[in-house]
Image 1 (cartoon, protein in one colour):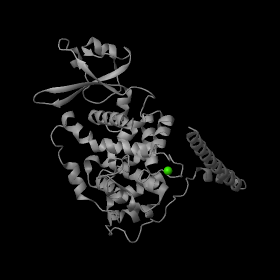
Image 2 (cartoon, protein in one colour):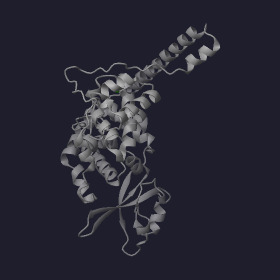
Image 3 (spheres, helix red, strand yellow):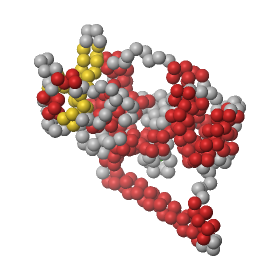
Image 4 (cartoon, helix red, strand yellow):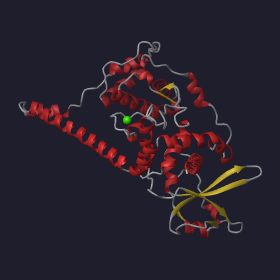
Length: 377
Ligand SMILES: [Ca+2]
């Protein structure tokens, strides 16, 4: 407990000192501006900061072959637009994109049809494996201090944080080996169906590169550009990644402690309720079939039904506050013969679906979390 308090104190001290140095810079700036005429002072105040990176820090030994991608007209338009909007050096962006490779395998993977309709019966065994649960218990024990601190700060169940990292990358064992800039450029420039989304993510990735520095080709991820232990897209990184060990870097690629804090922050910002329930398996009545009209279908939404409404409609929920809001889910275990499980999901179940918009994903995360919790005790 004392150790945890000490860490929190250290982090607050570092945050404070960072603020202090910022305000020192500001006062230096206003001192240098003091002798300028008013209209020049205004233009100085309005001017945006200079781009941090003006030359790519590419390791010459691992530099990818020249692709001249930046010479393509659409890529040049992208560079012009993003460099202007985000105040990045267009020559720096061109230097990187000129060594960026379009990857046809990624387009093929995106176009591959989904293998049949995935139901719970097929999905569950992919994620609820003995290995994933045992590895989860080990991972939890190894970074216990970070998990406890994340739960305290963000209010998010620490075993759910562990389970998400487990489902995403097997606790960092499979973080993806595509160059992020290759993956995002391929989808931004040669995959028209999602070009607008991925060119936004590519622009965000350049923003991260400009902030963090390092060899642009050393950043790795999935073929869709999801990065590090928690598989954050660049927009999620910018919005939710935190420096959870206080070393001044938000490193989701090599630092599990930063990943643990970042997943906690992500779920908190997605509406996680501290101490709230997640999900419960329920039974349904054979006589009163009114629940069929209330089950979730289409787009996932925050819980709207109350437990009392579902009880009236034939759902058997032995425990639970009558006015608590939940969503009723049908999970198909098998189509032939028809076997279903019925679950109710609380707000925290919905929060998990903000990480990946799938009820199957959220139930797998919940069950992996419960299995790790049991394994730790
Ligand atoms: Ca860090």
